[in-house]
Image (cartoon, rainbow, N blue to C red; front, side, top):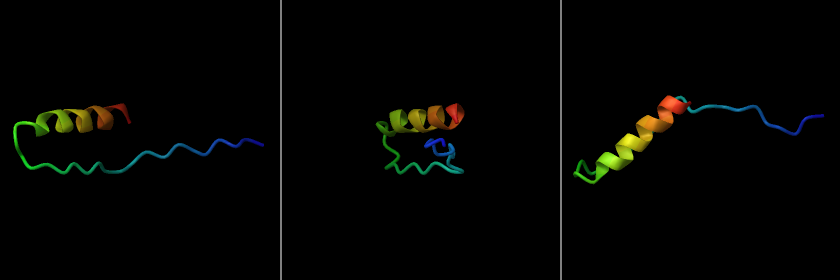
Length: 37
């Protein structure tokens, strides 16, 4: 019997930002994660 749960990928990624210049890193990371899934 396998104990591994089936992998489920999120349908959406929520990114909260204040639209400042510092949010670019968070946006880039969210895009990177979405592409990996």
